[in-house]
Every structure is written in structure tokens, then in C-alpha cells.
Amino acid sequence: MQAWKIFFGARWGKAVEIQTVVAEKLWSTCVDVDQFANFVLNPAINARDAMPFGGRLTLELANAVLDDRHVTGMPDVPAGQYVMLAMTDTGTGMPPEVAERVFEPFFTTKPEGAGTGWV
Image 1 (cartoon, helix red, strand yellow):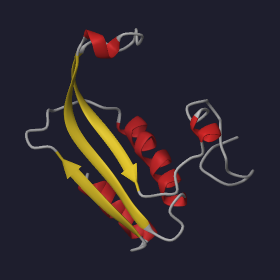
Image 2 (cartoon, one colour):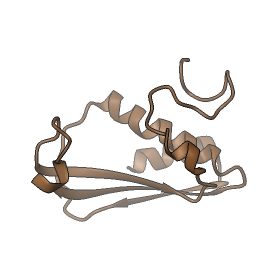
Image 3 (cartoon, one colour):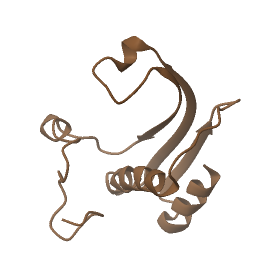
């Protein structure tokens, strides 16, 4: 997490404060480093873009237990112990019509040629 704080801080300057919160006794986990980097980078860039006059981006790692009730409707996610990454920011937020589509593949509100996508 410290590496992300340094990475974003060096590129974004002081306008966006980067805060990291890591739970005590965080469980060990295995992740694909490249997938994790993309997972963090893309929403972080969106958060930065939503804070044109500065703000705060918080990255938080915590332990999470998902029981059968939590994984209902998610056949690829077994119940068990996980490490959770939460990202919050003080950006402008999304209007309801954008929030409804936010998880659609290739959905963007950015003009052509802007953003991090390949489309």
C-alpha cells in the first residue's frame, strides 16, 4: 500500500491526498500482480478525474469473511476468508444514470481519446 501512495503522490502532486489504511493482522493473500495493478489503477484514475480541484483518495485493506448468505448469486465466489480492498474518494460523485451503468464493460463518460481504455 505504501508503494501505491508513493506512486500516486509522485504523479498527482499535492492536490490529491493519498491515504492508506491497512487493518492490523491482515491475512496473507495471493494475487496476480498485474491484475491487481489494473484493478487499483483504473478506478484511482477515475477518482482523481472526479476531483479536479483536489481531494482525498483512500485505499483500505481489511479482512473479510463471506458466508453463504454473502455469496448467494455469485457462483464463482466460494464462502470463506478474503482480503478486501476498498477505495473511497471525495470526488463529485455520479448521477444515477451513470451509476446504473458503471459496471458495464467498455462504458465510459469520457470523450474519445481520453481515459485509460483501448476503445
